Length: 246
Image 1 (spheres, rainbow, N blue to C red):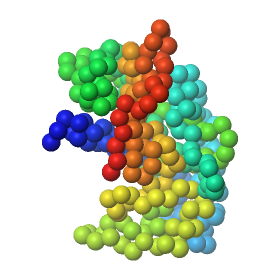
Image 2: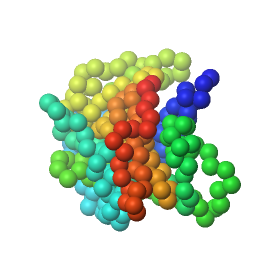
Image 3: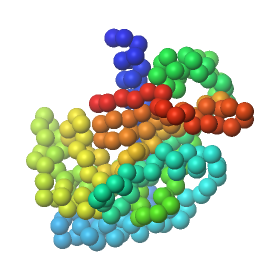
């Protein structure tokens, strides 16, 4: 396997792991409304979204702007595509993971590896911190925050899930109903769904001289955007340092 292919696969693994960490964090916290929906049906679908929006509004009201640079990056990198028809809601993960490294990255070596280093040797404990923050809601539009439990409810309604060594039937009528409310894309490998808006930040790695933003740009593609420190300011690079496709 060549170095380029290996690096891309490592980047995809990092993005997927970060997203899964976000989805499982504090599972069940603040989601009491889900107890009213042991099973999602066509009859209770609209009410489900009303309750989910109320839950999400309570989260959005507590989302704080603590880091102006991270806030600006979120706004720049998560503006959803709105050309033509769009669903009712913008959907964000409940949490965003930020990894902070107290070190200077060798930019040339990182470029050759197609992204932020996947392995940093001799890292001291106080040089590495992981933060979990609430993604900022969009400046306009209605937002929903997706958790692992909510994802399960939506997925069961849509069908097409793993059941032993087979996949259940996709309920296409239910999928069409969901698409009025939120983005719905079947996973590339089958057996799961994407309900988030794209582009989606799956993780941010911040070093002293580099901020790497890992994004999923669609249900099957992603890239890594760099902000490089120049004259004491982080400057967005015009092109992604790398991209991948499933």
